[in-house]
Length: 107
Length: 118
Image: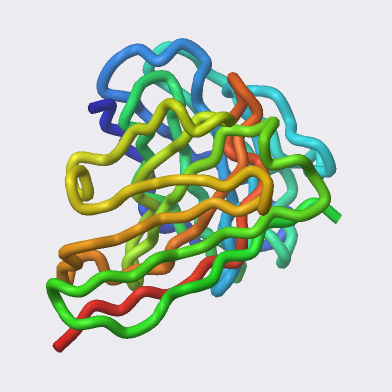
């Protein structure tokens, strides 16, 4: 099973600041790493697929990078509506797995 | 509008059974693999199961293997999750999600809540 470890677990950020979340895989997963945003009492929403491809309709301030075992989600110029928990997810091998989540609070 | 809607959750005693349903609309279910993902209260996301577009290929997380059965009825645009021998640790919100072959889960339902408690 591929273990995904995100850091940090929690981040408190002021609006317009830049947010960086990392995700490290326990083995190489190529670019089969995706990022989801989940707001309270909502289902997850796909932000970035295959490490760096923006999903349709996602604001351009969200971007992703990385390959192999190390990946990054960046939120440029954070907005209040970005308060959420962010999960990385790998679809390279079964069982599909998720990171533990990073909660982003907007001050 | 493309969407999936889960139902069938509820309160059940340990050892009991429930069948979850997920109805798809706005797209042809038979063209997609479908997955179930769950989220225990206050916890992260856990992949549970998947089924191929024609129902011939299924996979399960080790924690539910032998107790849960995924199935689908493409004529009814419906996905199912039969959950037997339920345990307290199965308590969670269960989401169904759509997957285009080779792509990540892109459409998720609002979830249905399963509570296993005596």
